Length: 175
Image 1 (cartoon, rainbow, N blue to C red):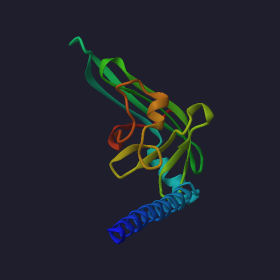
Image 2: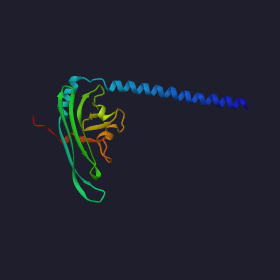
Image 3: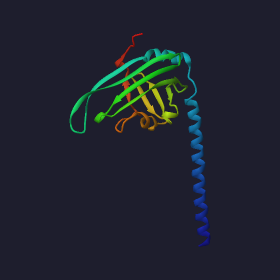
Image 4: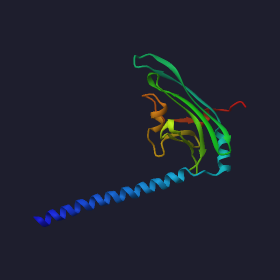
């Protein structure tokens, strides 16, 4: 009986220790990935990409209120080249019942081929990734997904993670 109890106690502490070791290792891996994601990317590559995505993206759609009324909404994303590897962006997104998201700032090109906006103290932990694929401009809220930017710049029914704009709707800015 005493032997069984000691074995179970040892097994319990071994499991706890294993979880801690694995958790620390995963946290260290995420820190390293985060450092990599925040490293500046290739300036020439960034400049060429910015030239291809700079512009205004607009889309209109039917929206509604909880009382059943409908209205026309418009999502807008603007991207402007401010340096060879930095964009200025501004967007306004509209959601059900009049809720919206609004954010603007500068984002720099990173080594993981995304643009990263790092919010200031007022925006708490808002780190928004802007990803340009062949078809879309997409948002990822937080380094690995999350809601830090949403919590700062969106109404209750708004959200940023996974929002995308088709590159085919791009209009050039008049300079």
